Image (tube, rainbow, N blue to C red):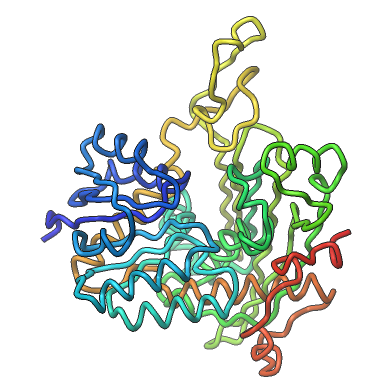
Length: 415
């Protein structure tokens, strides 16, 4: 039954949990029973109750919450991901019965951690959902649907380009490469890698149909390594990029092979923490034989203007747009950001899948492959070479590879 209620428990009380609570307002048959977080999530719980999402009790731990929920949504910070999964598995061993586990991107900071997450998920035995919201964006889904006839007649896309940029993360741990897993490539490159792979994949084939052949990438520290901006990071977050820098810009190219036709196609990605314009910007385009698509998240049907005299009345720039850096001038407004970015759609997909006893469109195995591509990009940038994903020795190296930036040794490759 599509209206069967699933009881959700959220792990993590930060920005992404708040975004998902907004998205869940548009999802039928989900009740937010509880939240647990390293930092008290009382404000989020109160918000969930106020919008009718459920009783949203605050639990002291995953262990305490697990027996009361059907689905656990794991939004904990990257460095806490494995520990959280260990606790979920222990709760299941103790008798908790789960119908699904959701993990917000990325699945883990590196492949050893991702393997542990995957092994624990298999032990738990519940269906999984890897949350990569951008694949679910309506503008991409509609583009694929609109172009289906052209794709069938002319062949699939041969080039996809995906970019995500904003002025930088909200929390200190995101800026710390040892906690987050790197810099902007780890934070946002996983989005673009997934989008590129997805767009190039024929619509009548599985998401992992195309075989990754090679990855080339560059990582740079262009803005936040400068003295003025390094000091701002110290003052705001206590993170010193003179000691443990991370990349604020990354770009690269992934080559895929169609195993049926042998054709090779390309996915280009660009991400940065230096975009000091309206706010978060997503750019996606694709080129096929005789057709194309293009999407820009900043093309909004709504704009407002706030002059200097009125600017003092505006308290929150991000009320208009995620990662906005200005509260005056001509502002692009997105009336429903969670919907624009695909958050309700990925939640609907996961909930429907869990009710049917299966994993979502994107599962933990898919998330594992995105971690592999991310690690290949770091290795390429670190060693200044194209990484051959058909080479057995290279794949073996990636299995236990920890990027120097993630180790806190970014100064050896960035400065």
